[in-house]
Length: 77
Image 1 (cartoon, rainbow, N blue to C red):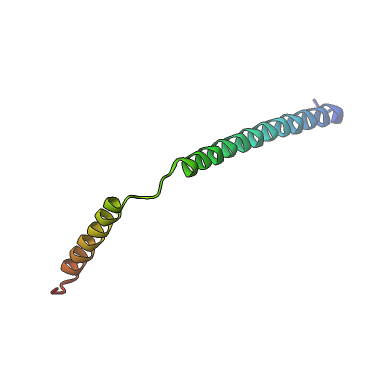
Image 2 (cartoon, rainbow, N blue to C red):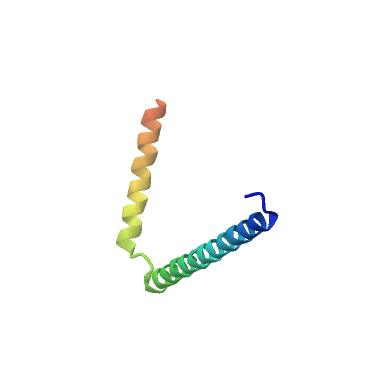
């Protein structure tokens, strides 16, 4: 087992295997990123501007949060 050619062959095979796994992982990662980009683009295309009722509801919720934060801070409104 002291043959340098054996160790060189094993190191080369290990490096080749690691390279294959790395390229496969990177290709999978790029595919996943492409999928997420497509999902985001589809959401942006389908998204309609919020209605007036939705904006009023959001404003009401923000006002409630502001009041609750003031109460938590001990400030009288």
